Structure formats: C-alpha cells, structure tokens
Image (cartoon, rainbow, N blue to C red):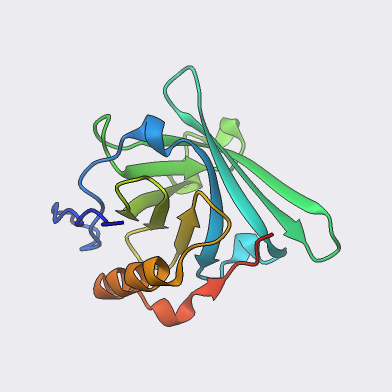
Length: 170
C-alpha cells in the first residue's frame, strides 16, 4: 500500500503536514487503535481500543471511542467532530465535552489526519503540537512492513515515534 504524500499547506500554528484531502464518507466506520502516544484521557484503557465514526444529519460526525479497562469493563466516550475548511479537509475539530460547552473554543481538540493509505485502511492522526498521535487500522493487526513504513514517515514529520505504545487488540 502506498500512502499519500503529506500536504505542505501553510499553517501559522504548525508545520505538521496533513494528507492533501479526505473523502470523509470513506473514512467513516470502525478503526482499531494500533499504537498511540500515552495521554491522560486514555490512561485507564488496558487495550482493545476502537473508534467508530458515524455521519450525523447535520454534516458532523459522531465519534465513539471505546476501550477495555484493566478490570474487564468497558470505557466509552461519545463525542462529535466537524471538518475545518472545505468538504475534503483532513483537519477536524473534535469535542467530548457536553454540547452546552461547545461555544468554548478550548473544548474542541485538533484531529489532523497526517497519513492515510490509498485503501483507507491505515491512518495516523495527530495535532499541530505533535503531543498526541494515534495509529489506526481497519483491522486489529497490521503487517510489520506497513507499520514500520508508516512510523518512518511519521518520524520524518518530526514526531517522536519512540513514545509510541502498541495497543493490545484481540
């Protein structure tokens, strides 16, 4: 699988490049978390993490993140995402805070698709500060060669890939 070259679109906040364009309907559906940078909002997750993206009637996207906890329970977070820019923009804003707080810009986080294979089967998502990174796949496992090639491209984008932690999947 060959990945798209990242867009060199100018951005005053970051030189992190996104993919050139996103076909959002193709991106919707279920994605397995393959690896991530550790973060505060997933600290209770022991693995088996999935995200499901569903189109909403108003053009936004429902985001359902779920993971298994150490005690065997499940943690579920429901949010909403909206594209920033045109209909093919790979830059989204995501909110997990209550809808009543949606007017506060700080409750919206950046969700930038920075790598995506042509089959929409393997993706990398980050944000301008490069503090967060997720590697997502349509399947619970990824060929080592595809994973290694993706990690090399991410390193070339200035992401500290040494921080990546694999996510256990079934």
